Length: 107
Image (cartoon, rainbow, N blue to C red; front, side):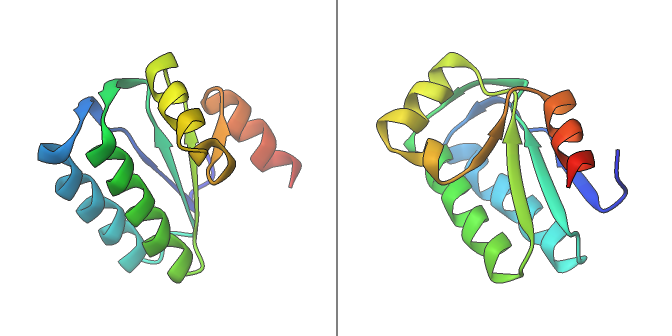
């Protein structure tokens, strides 16, 4: 994995109770000058609108710092949430880390 990439691995249910913690973690990485953040959803079982809101706010923070953020390993429920809200067009989403690393290597 490229050292310029920081992987964030939320787990369980990404909802209002975990949203602030998640956003704070992203903000800390941005403050440290990380160039790219990969959010690996492999251990997230469910995400509600609060989790989606946290993700959107994190993306704004990341973009304001001229950093990149990608997602991978989203499950069917999260995929459906993204499609219903058209967020699948906003985020760069990879099927898994391997696909992300291949895409990163091709740049």
